[in-house]
Length: 345
Image (cartoon, rainbow, N blue to C red):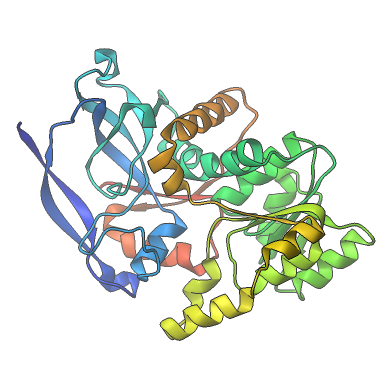
């Protein structure tokens, strides 16, 4: 089979974003049965990319590798069994790594047509919105009247979670780190805002809750926040863990990792049963690998919600591909809002 010459931003070493990436040429094979080749115009950043750069994401391919989970572009070629009318269609698509490339191969079921929707808007409908939808509307649906805590509420996943939780009738407690983000999450519908830089967020939440307890915590941080959230959950409450952002701040390798685990403490299953508390772990890469039909369902649902005007993805900062290091550093800093999109130069 023939190959197409392309180029990609390779992750070549761990550590500082300025030294981690290199632009390299490569050859990509023709799409196999059921796959499509996308000529990309842009790709999105996810915190898992930061984890991979720091050597903390064991699912990432060995270096040098191309990371990235989602792209926007036009379908250039199709494999056997794929409808010919898809050729030339502009889509947003999932990929299992490889997103930081000008050409990407991915299954046809992992794409959704977007027409003229701006890339920076469509990008947030992929990994972030699908992750949020899977957690809040598919895995363990948020119910009317539930009290929901959303960490990193101004981020790509957090902003979608706020909208979904409010759509489903919940009371939302949004955790952020500055006044600008407070304004954003209130605009999206958050009932209460907790700025963790003012004072301990758990103390603030306890005052807001009064005699009540949390029903749900959407937690992408882990570490020290785990115990605090568990103490705030009531009977029937559930902690949904979908990341380890607190781990990235460690500077001491294995010692930092051990300290991260120490902060989370030991969970005894019988204790969860006796208190009727639940812990749910979410790794969307595993869902993509073992239950791709779930990912397809969630992607179609969020696109429909967007088209109906019920879901507004938050467009974050945009960068050119020649500024990938700055884009990574911005995401890692925690000072961004919405989805970061990188356009090919």
